[in-house]
Length: 600
Ligand code: F6R
Picture 1 (cartoon, rainbow, N blue to C red):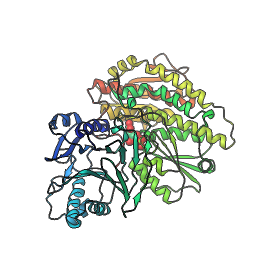
Picture 2 (picture 1 turned 60 degrees about the horizontal axis):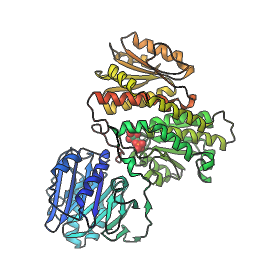
Picture 3 (picture 1 turned 45 degrees about the vertical axis):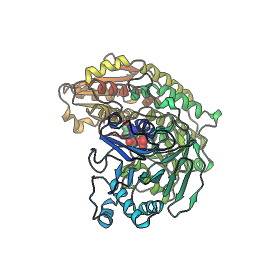
């Protein structure tokens, strides 16, 4: 959610900033801006819209070796040029970009900035105006920066430049991700290594409550109390090629296609010969001894959690609850005596999930994070992390991370069952390999899915997805995919529940997509389809080999009954993709959304 890039070096900053912002655009894309400094002063360019528009707007004749840039997902203030970052202090001396939310910005305004005429409606501008006030008082930039950070409540990753100093970028962090990338004669500041991988793979992690002075040849990290921090850099394990679309028209299609590969990667990484999950003894014991597991997640990851609950209960016999992160923080259920918390998050940065993690760690409970970004906040702050090995997921709609989450949860459940001395008639690696092959069969049938999407979804206002048991949980995900990228109002429903009210919405030709992959409810779900067909619905049944009937629109290859979600979700992802494409939607960057939701 929002992206930051800063550069200080010998070469022209502008291209590095614009290229970096392009890589971060999936995190927020309603407005963008850059500010660069040279001996003629500060040059600021901001636009409402995308980085492509910013690229056109920037004065390409301006050369500079230091600058900062931002791509925004609006929280305070509408998307507009004036609310776009960078923001400037009253005199124009300080210029700043910010990710996060300053919770006390109104109080700060009242107390310190009553005489300042704010130009924007953002919480961010308050930071830069405060900075100027405190710099006037202290006559010391670092001290003013430190004092400003002390006054802020909320989340922030900040990069700041000073018109009177072309040799430093100042950065700070609390609860929002921030890294400093290290180079020869240059350094960068970024909210995500992906933005600057082209120039360096060496990064210094910045922790909450730290401020950093970044120059061309050195980086100084200190805590807010002035204590210097000595930290070793790490090598970012992201392949540059993974961040490119290649020959695909959209990242989403590429990522759907990558799913069989991701399954095989997970199998390889978690093979027993490769030491399996490599869980440390204390977390292994916490899982084994847990009397209840609490899965915390949001959106698609929450949907994966619902499938994970089935694995943990059926395979490892542990009662498991799945909670929406944003609800759990405020409405915590009565906890069991020995709970274990599992956080599922593609990005590892979701603020709603992090708020729960902070709370339960204060309460002394163990936590395991399943994420695609080891080193992310949720990974660092939990006791243990399981990596999804899905590679960067750039399309805002999550696809390969969802199936990776399900696969890792299955392996975790099997491992837990084994640790508890239980016998299981389920060989996860073999079954995952079969599921990977089945996914491949499905990704090869894009033409069929495109035709179905055209027939059923090109003109519809709404759509329903129905299923029972695990199919119902996949339907929730199918509906989320469709609504977020095609803007069709879509709902996932338990097949038997529709008639308790929602069936009133079924009209002539309303698309109802039904999943039938579970033997024990095959008869029941087909009965539910008949109920809606009798009221005019246009049914599209996706069944599994062995359970199919002649009238089914699409049949998926048979896989183990635990793993059907890995396979049944693929046609739903493709249906959503083609529906969005035919409706002229921006598939990879749907309106109002951003990847990685770092505000609560
Ligand atoms: C939907 C989607 C979101 C995320 C949710 C949680 O396609 O991507 O629903 O799943 O915002 O994000 P993570 O998994 O990063 O915690």
